[in-house]
Image (tube, rainbow, N blue to C red; front, side):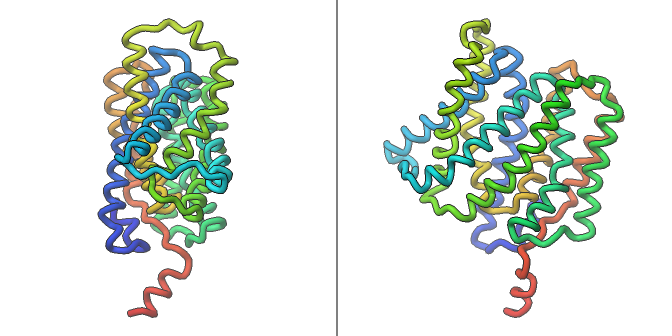
Length: 312
């Protein structure tokens, strides 16, 4: 699967891209379950999300101030560019957590698997990519077919859960396209700068959301809940770093496909610890989606094929 990004990438970036993809896949596999654990043992989704963002922003800033990592200082031009990124990022994560609060993990995974079809079209319209090849287009249709089959056989249907999935679907599509655009166009000193700006700016409006929800005063604080929260915060730092690094190196569609491909591990672990499972047909539909994701090949930038031929 990693070979899909090489065609329009420089050879000296291949190892960096592999590092970013593998790191993102590992974090993505664990983050979904971590969030599910956090909101289960600490039913305060707004506070959980704010903690992840704040810990990431503060941690990156501290290490940057200490000279351990290179972090861009706050500048108005970059702040203005990343303000919308932060809002979209915040909306995506919040609807993610609300979806997990009301539906099972498989439901979210399969709906996520259906997003690359629309994102591939947006890649072509807004980001200068070619349309998918015939094989890749078949794979995208397979993702959509698998998602539809799963929904038909989902024994844990909850109307609130699917409402949140639908809202998340729209926000997630915007997230994939716009944040890729900003990663390509806004020059940063390091990837940690993107992580700091996004998490810091996104954490600010969430303070008011947490205060308005009054979750902190009503939730029951336990050692298990705090441990789950701490784990989600640690994974949040790693997830944010690898996500932005991968976004800067591969297409928006391929980034989405990579995120989907790692979900098999999530399902296996989920089957061991949760009781909200899909039936055998639903799980088979999910596996079919992952097979389609495996055979997808990233579309090159428009004109890159002609350019490469002319230089031979």
